[in-house]
Structures are given as structure tokens and as C-alpha cells.
Length: 362
Image (cartoon, rainbow, N blue to C red; front, side, top):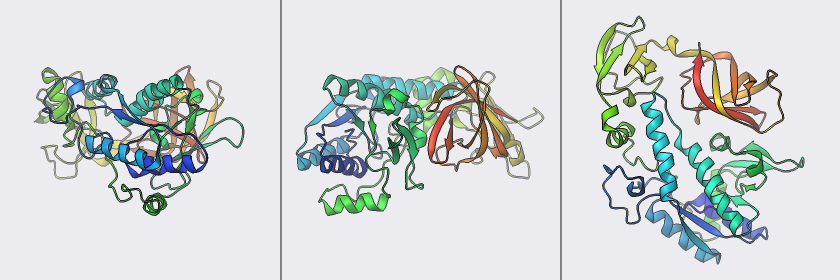
């Protein structure tokens, strides 16, 4: 059981015990050991993990306490060097002009990568987490489903889980709403019942993504030009890494109507701004795909697609275009389709495929 020190993983462990499973609690140490290193460091093993993350020192203490209360073994796994891969990805994507999603990579590479490997060494049959999603085994083959509490659904960040890992995944709170999880924790005397939810980017505690990128790669964050829709220079910026597609605030230029970032060009270090209509896309292409259903290259599949974690699935058509590529065409144009984010497709509540957006199709 991946113990984060939060209420979700704590209740998950308790429910698994109640169901008769033998549970081993594991906390993944991702940041610094003492938590006092300066954030300016470039060493991924010295990155300071923020208090709002899912892997701080306080979280480790909470996880240890809950495991003691539940009378289950508790292990701390040192994944600090492995976590450096997530940070390198994060910085690299921003420098390439894309907007990354490190939580998906953390799930793929660590929780259902390194942690799954560790589970096999101790003969554990499953890796469980406190995600709000479901694994349905009623039809024989494990299927990844949206959480019952759609307002908390986290299936999007699990899209990269391959079928062989899904077969060994457990998501104990997927059928519950958040309020029910907190009520269970309180009723069972778990001290984390009212602990605030963690935020997404645990290694950027001040939410200043560009600052981290600048500290890691100062030579790549330099001043550039702001362009209008016609390619005319209308201002300057301090580095394209400060911006993402659809951003409206902090552009530093005005034209008498609301402006949004409609394009980024990392090669020439420019951002292009324009009105909201320029954000609309009819579809997107993606690579590094993961399919959880049988499919044929070129076959069109009706689905609902999400283009970011906090968006609603919209009607679309999905098609595999190659062994590791796909395209999605929306029934209605969507705003701010962002390279670097994932497009995730569903058939009803079942997650059927996903990939990393490489390009929006206008």
C-alpha cells in the first residue's frame, strides 16, 4: 500500500485490512532527508519537498503513525534519485515549449514502476493507492474506470498504467466520495481524517515553475519577443517557460481586448498572443500512447476525451494512427489544447486509451 500520509491512502489501507488482505505500508521518500536544503539546488536528491505535497517529512510521520495504529509493517523506500527523473522531465518539457504533467509521470515511473518492482521482491500480489478511480474485474480482464465521485476522479493521471500493471492494481476508495472517506477515517480514529488535500506539484512549493526551471537551467531561460497573430513584435518576455497555452494573466502587453497565449515557439523563444477564438482546436495528435482495449490502426472509435486533468470529457472520435501514435477529433472545437498535457479517452466510465499531446489541430 502506497502510504502518502494523507486520509485517502490511510483509509485505503484500513479497508484492505478489513477485507482480509495482508497489507504492507510503503512511503516513497522523494525529496531531501532533512527538508532544509535550499530550493536553488540543482541536485535532484536535494530538492526540498513542500508542505503541500504528498511526500514531505510531516507526511512520512503521519504515514508511520497510521501504520502503527493499523498494526501493519511500514517501510520507507528511498526513491530520491529516481525522482530526479521526474524533475528532469519537468524542466525539459518546459524548455521544449510544452506544459508537463509530472504527477502522471510519477505514477507511471514510481508508484506503478519502482514501487511495483519492489512489491514483486516481497511477493506482494498487488500495489494499492488512494486514487479516486476504480479497477473493475467483473469481466475477467481488469478495466480502469473513473471514480464514483466524479468531482474527485483521478483516472486521468493513471492513464499510462499498462495492462500488465493494471492487473495488479488496487484502488480501494474508488467507489467512495471524499466526504465518505473522511467520515470513515474519523470513525476509525485515524488522526489524518481532516488533513487538507495535497497539491499537485510537490517539488515546486511556491508554485513558481519558471523559477525552478531557471535555477536548474539558467542558460535556457532568456528574454524573448511577444508576437501578435500577424507575427508582429508587440512586447518582450523573460522566457517562454513563464507561459502556457491559454494563459491570460501576466502577459505584459495590451491591445484593447483580452489577450491569451495562443502559441509558444521554444526554438526562437517567442510567445504569440491573440483573442480567445485563436485558442480553439478541432483535435490533437499524441504519442507515447497507452491502450487498455483491443484496437486496430486506422479504426475510428467513438469516445469522450479529456485534454487536461480538470476538464470535462467531451464527445470525440479516437483513432490509432501508428504503433505509438493516435489522433482525437472533437465533435466541437476545444479551447487551449496544450502540448505536453495528456489526452485521455473514455468509453462511458472506462478509460480506453491516452497519449501525450504533441500538437493541436486547428
